[in-house]
Image (spheres, rainbow, N blue to C red):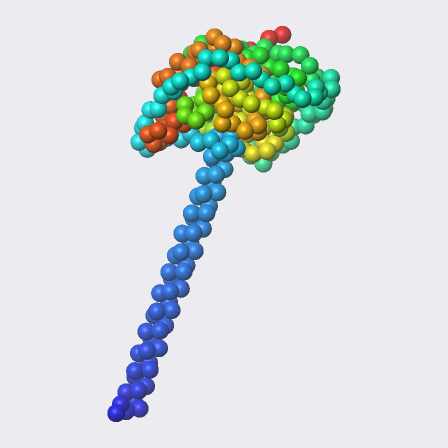
Amino acid sequence: MPTNEQRRANAKRKLERQMVYRQERAKKRRIIAVVSTVVVVALVGGGVWFLATSNVFGNGDAAASETPTQESVDKAENIPTALHQIPKRPQALPDKVNCEYTKGQEPAAKENTPPANGEQPATGTVGVTLGTSIGDLKFNLDRALAPCTVNNFVNLAKQKYFDNTTCHRLVVTGIQVLQCGDPGGNGMGGPGYSFKDEVYPELTYGRGVLAMANSGPDTNGSQFFIVYGDGANLQAKYSIFGTVDEESLKKIDEVAKTGTVSQQPGQGDGKPKTAVDIKSALVAN
């Protein structure tokens, strides 16, 4: 029969064990909470990065990696040769539309002056030639498709915003696009302002289409993409504002055939192995 002193000693040891157990449980809960927070932050941050570089595209599309840990080169295959027919707007725009460019929270990746807010013409076309490391890429911008987008692109081009930048993303699997327009070259940069989408349900994408990249609704800035091949998996979320001529597309085809540098084999999305550096952007008078 234990004495009172023994019972008190046993009770004390039991209490001490319980306290240690509770402390260990509390410590584990704190560790789990910290790890969970880090994971959530990483996922959110990754999602933002994913959208900005995908955005193309907001875009259910894989994002490019700036520094692959294990280089894998995936090459484009079965590139379509037929030019895509761009759907016309179901209802034509008036001769002029109001455009607004809203200052963002992030600073501009390169100094520029945003376009002035106000009316812009919604008729006519503008020719732009990008002088690049793979040769000239010729665009035909169409105001009837996206007048505010055309106005923005011309404004940036005239300020030499695209000069001495590189096309940071090439996708060869699922969709076939080349993405450019970030002076930082990592898919995260923009002009420091944004403007609304100019989209409609009938939009479809394919070879020769020139469209805006974004990180969600109404987040257009300076990043754009060229569909050199398949674009069927893209949803009507990206403002089409022009076309790329056939000779230019052939040059991009050769880049796509040399491949994109990805983090994982088969990812098919990363920096082009053959660099596409934009040296100049000339707007036709």
